Image (cartoon, rainbow, N blue to C red; front, side):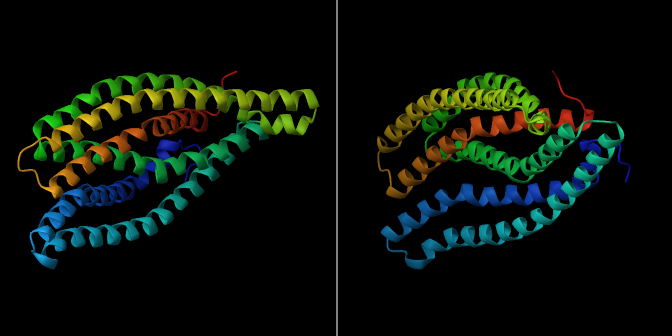
Length: 287
């Protein structure tokens, strides 16, 4: 394989296998989305004396989820380990040939591992969050249209907040990665002022990223909290409501809340991936 290949070109031959594993993941998440619905059926059925028959849909979803998740995890490990081996080998040989410093190459090799980890762990988390998010809103509409509308309207301001956060996170990630690329040289140099200055800078950029993430999460969570309370009130205010329907509707509202809760962390990881890809492919860093 040509060592001049970029990150995108190296991954390209694996695109169908990657698409397959993400498809299996999407199926897993659909099973998860159906948990509250089938558990609500089980609760109502057991209260009505329907016996074990009421539990069968829930049991079927659970077993299907176990089977698909077990297969995907074993498949994923083999797939992404093979991809990382190619990317890391190509990166080191290409950038050695281009005369890059050992410090930059070592940092970018570690970043390549991080990039593959994002594809293996963070992208599946994003897919799961998106399916839970939109699947939860759709299912909530089935229980009460106004409750579904409340959660759907919530997405507008949340998306605006997350869009702002994405831009800021990318900028701070670039500053942090710039520092990481210099780490081997700083350690090799061994001068106390340089070492202290380097690690103070690393701490500064990590603190800024963490603080920004905390503020964005808090702002989004206040909106989510208000929406969940409104949904709870709406579901329990209906006439002839059943315990299973209240449980399922509230579970979907909480699933949406948990999916949105993951937003800041996932956005930060994707921002790092954007910057890492630029470094791995282009072989240079900003000053």
